[in-house]
Image 1 (cartoon, rainbow, N blue to C red):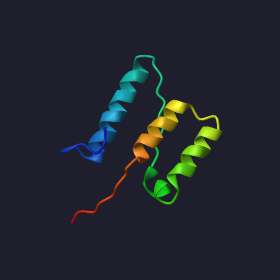
Image 2: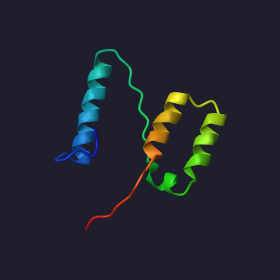
Image 3: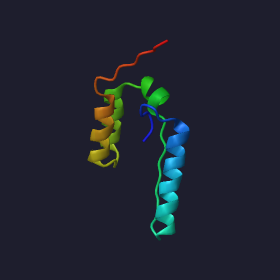
Length: 79
């Protein structure tokens, strides 16, 4: 949802709240996890992190998702 051209963080939050409210009104349930990876993952060796997750009971699909996020990750700053 976030980081889309022409959409603000406020738009994403309003959209999420609407979707969650609609789901709850219909008798459904909502589970949400917010994670800010930027600072945490810049300070850790990614191979060690993946090995740690694999050694724990983290589902392999989540480890693969995290690894795909970390693979060939580059940062840039534009002024």
